[in-house]
Amino acid sequence: GQNIDQPTEMTATEGAIVQINCTYQTSGFNGLFWYQQHAGEAPTFLSYNVLDGLEEKGRFSSFLSRSKGYSYLLLKELQMKDSASYLCARDTHGDYKLSFGAGTTVTVRA
Amino acid sequence: GAVVSQHPSWVICKSGTSVKIECRSLDFQATTMFWYRQFPKQSLMLMATSNEGSKATYEQGVEKDKFLINHASLTLSTLTVTSAHPEDSSFYICSTFRPASISGELFFGEGSRLTVL
Image 1 (tube, chains in turn yellow, green):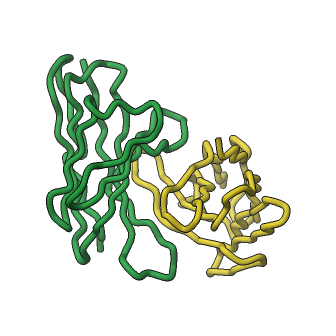
Image 2 (cartoon, each protein chain N blue to C red):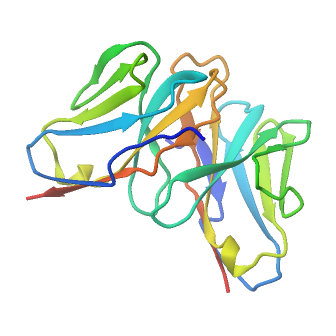
Image 3 (cartoon, rainbow over the protein chains, first blue to last red):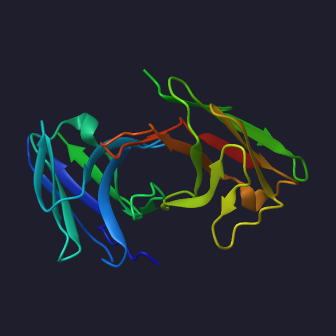
């Protein structure tokens, strides 16, 4: 399998910062995706990292270390609407056939 | 707006009946579409890859005779769950990508929640 591991749950307060870690098997790895999924809805794209380093997009940033098989999604200035499941996914050889982690449920409290 | 449209959003059927789910790309031609299944509180699992004009390729453990996939046009793929049983109750989601895209973004449909009684 792809052995994609991420924490099951995280809780934080509004305005805080949350870092969601994801580890994966490096064999055949091409790129790492992060998706947000609200309950009962389809996932929405957040980021795609192919190269090492940090990519910032507004309040959300994603980091990748190819050699370590490690990524994280950083959520800043948390808002209540950020309460959702965050899915780490990888593709192999750029074929868009994604293998997903089980998701991290983030709960934002007032 | 939406890039991929999927319907029905919800479907309830009796055990033994067949259910068809449609997935359409709205503003580009999609030669390849993917079908995923998600059970409650579990990860999305890739079921099959739908290829326009050719047979679908199925992931290990997915019964191709039970989950029929047709990709007859560049904008439409259908998944038919044949002789559905309660254990087939799940959230089915299609996805595709924009040709020649460099962003790597995969677009998902709204998902179809199937309940088999």
